[in-house]
Length: 124
Image (cartoon, rainbow, N blue to C red; front, side, top):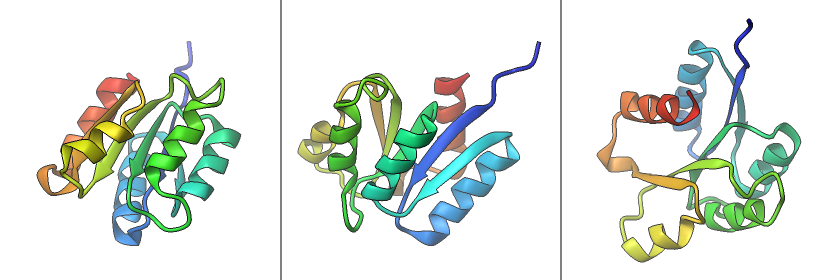
């Protein structure tokens, strides 16, 4: 029986980080979608319905918190798994961003393998 393709959407405005994450997940047989801001991310999430979203908070056009709020208002997005990637470490900002079924990683505190392991555990 064929295994279902795992889909990930990476929403990150830092080009080098977006490229590294995208490459790493492609090597692990994920179908990878990318976006450089929350507006583009929301549209790609709506169209492609990924299994998980890696989401930066501070981005141009639409920030990650607003994007996540918009996703949570849709039927398909109510339970989508999200890992918020942030440089913010103020608890208030992080808590505000976690609209159920979301986790966060502070960028300065993780290594690439940490995020890959976390995604693989969540998506299985």
